Length: 190
Image 1 (cartoon, rainbow, N blue to C red):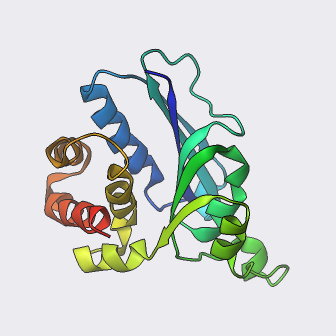
Image 2: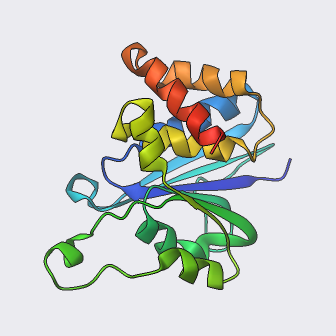
């Protein structure tokens, strides 16, 4: 199998590392060679966090270069816009419509860009933008946005729901298991 590339982008504290761990565990059980690389910005201060997940028959590098991502999973609209140049021409961005103000916006030095979804689509990009935060809250916690997004991503992979659920069981602490299973289903059915 040719190498596939998934970028998971967000803001520190949103759970992008758990999302990459879950995806990595699932791919490992399917027998793929996997490389996962985490790039931290000022994550503890709400900065950008990027995780690369590459898988296939043989993967040599953990890094995804511009124009190589099959999927970009974004926890926030500005992060989706920030990484569009990494997407393949036939790639897909799945993003939460939530907006989290970066420090320049908080301090008043800049304004949050308007109409980001329309601007991304105007570039000819296949974009799925939905309110993952609302679904996470419906599942029981705003912190489950990551799992809602994984649920949406699952629509584009040829794995069973049971395989995804098993990956959740091995990635999430038992006390949060049912909440995360519900969040996954809500994302998969969105």
